[in-house]
Image (cartoon, rainbow, N blue to C red; front, side, top):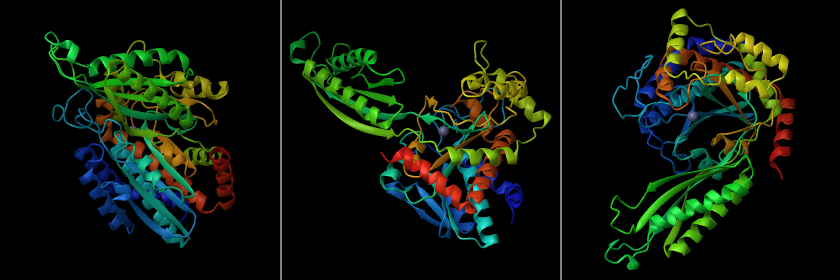
Length: 465
Ligand SMILES: [Zn+2]
């Protein structure tokens, strides 16, 4: 079996992978409640000859499928959770929920899981037909949207023994993701005070809502004394009730703090904790702190990214029909704002002038309905203003992330437009493309022991302090 046969294998079996993607799209199960989705994956993996383990790290919907023996061990990561309130009919260019308020795959994780499954199956096929040593493991990672489950799996050292981990994410760009996503810590602060009649005996009351107000004010002043790339956001999730004439006895606020590096994020979260305790002191209330989740910044790996990029270029981009391009064009009309900056513009600071000019022309000056180029790879130190639990994987093994255009250009994230694409032929084509890029990279690595050494060296340099 050659590398070309891998692509053919994925094409010839695409009905299976697309049917899994569309079924997960229909199920649209929320974080850590993806019971039926996980069952479907475990069933398909077993049918395909993988040895399945479920209930990883105490999570009922976390699982893996392993095939082969010996090294290298290549991990391919899949996600499959949906988002609430994003129900939407597939392939429609206007907002049309299947059921108002129901869930939808607004981040395209139905494709993410099924594309990774396709890649894992292709690598399995290659190992079998060529009778090669090596192991491929598909990881079913639940709860990406809500609980950063990979972080808990990292605590159990799930990824430590891999040679590399490969994953992807649906996008409106075709690229190998480089730079680093920032680290994040999310905590809930619960203030407990004393309830009282706000007019009759206010002196007896101690307000938990006052404590939140003071905490928020303290954090506002903190913002002046943190590095520029820091992000702090909050939501008051319980304001203590709706009656102003009651002194609020309990109130809750959730804070999310983010810095480019995880160690700085830990320090910043401690400063926010200190402000919460001070607010409790000032109001004579008590505060308890509950850690919701955290993700480390991603550690990128240049040799691995470069190899993946070469594979991306080798595979090339899919052709779209007139109808598909029209669908993308109509969908763009539903979110295009006059002030929107095309994402191509945003690539300006990442690319050389020559590469940028090429990309700009190919994208029809930022107007192509579906981006029709692979972003030229240039390792960059760019800090990306988002967080992902892939970060925790990347501290345990060299990790690479691919993005493919499953959505039209500039499509907003976590949107009904994403849900519409998720079970459309545009989404399917992007997913199959991602599967080929990942499988091609994995197969290359089976024959490149020196490359694996190089990849490991850079990983150690960046993670062993
Ligand atoms: Zn996502």
